[in-house]
Length: 141
Image (cartoon, rainbow, N blue to C red; front, side):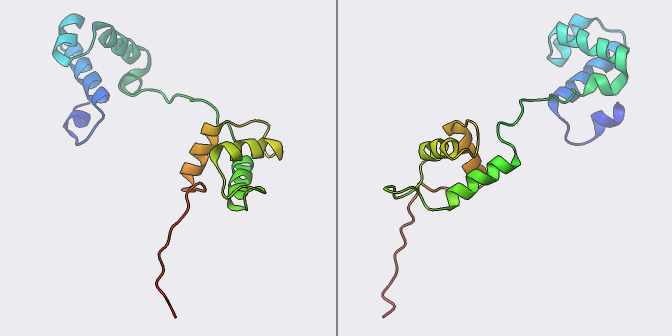
């Protein structure tokens, strides 16, 4: 723990928990440790409980959170990107996010998709089909 506190950049939560554990080991009360470190008494107590149950690693670091499952899998994302790269439907000059979402469902590329999901997908691939590039070209004559 001393090495952790002396080393360079560490997450603030980790350092606070290490400081709290060190002060608890010195015999200070939970409320006093909480005031010294800038945590709530409950957080200090939970940190000490995690240390007793699982050791230093469990007390200092948070477990990974599962997060929400991705709405589109790899092949579905590829199909939508391929759709964007193709020509827009008849009567349209360019793709819009709303049009892409509707067309992806209509062509059965995905069972359902929202405009926001399509927007984020396009943003991640740096695609902006709704933009028209205006290029000024000189006379090459």
